Image 1: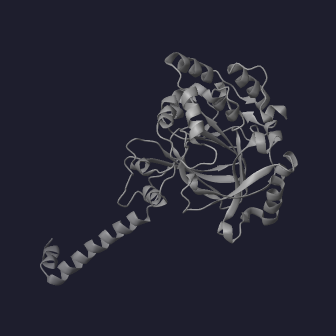
Image 2 (image 1 turned 90 degrees about the horizontal axis):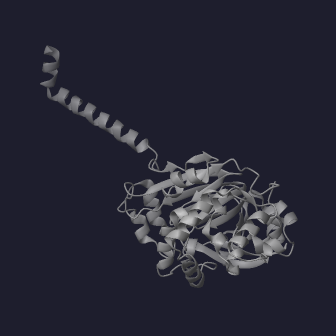
Image 3 (image 1 turned 90 degrees about the vertical axis):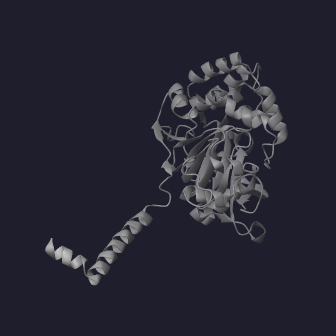
Length: 378
């Protein structure tokens, strides 16, 4: 004690003492800085097969995304060994639109259409380029070109014969609608090489999305919809400013949203099925050559969220989902408490169905006799 008191009474000792404190504080700051910037980003919950009722309770009603495992090669069966398999399955002259991501493009998701080619031409170019993907010329800003969100029933009807519709989609209220324009819209096909990426965006019609990784792997990022999440007040045409998104995931900056936004991220590999709740925002990046098959759904459990979007003025600039379709859905899904309850009961009792079974079921629900969709004709 005597030595300590003497030392503290000397100026040199006090200086050493203050230096020690400063060094300790510097170490604390260094440790804090070493914590990953995205420490507030949660992993997308992974689940193995759940009943529709349990899934609805745990994820749909809660507005949380999920990665469902257990389907592997069942949704597209036989599975795809490589991108070249698409050329063998699909019609050789089937046309697709090649698109690229333009961060300055104001349309939904930053998706800018480039040109039309046959699917076989694109697959051949993909095969030659490998995982690095196909790049456009100067007119496409030398960006990666990909097939984005093409209707399977039109682009590759033969693929429907290999498609299993997950039970979570079978109960969709879209299956009850008789309108032919809606029949050939889902499922949808996307194909691209490593590095293909799209801007953060939410579905312009407020639909839930189910995305199956038929080949490759993808990094998915989902921001769950919360009214308190300031990010959603900045959305324009279904797209979010990238600068705000960067600040959100870093949990820092003038628009900090850590307390009010739930950000989820995971890498999904072949055979996994991603669920994106209505109004949630999605961003994805392909980590290798990838093929996705996506379904859209109107869930009885979240019909209020979808209706809220359908009632709002349409602002998105999207080649497929336009104001006419919004008006059509708004009228068709107006419903009633009794109809909503019936739809919920149908959804909870649903099971996985092959496309032919699902096609027949949805037509019987809508009161028709023969399904004349492109897929069933094939």
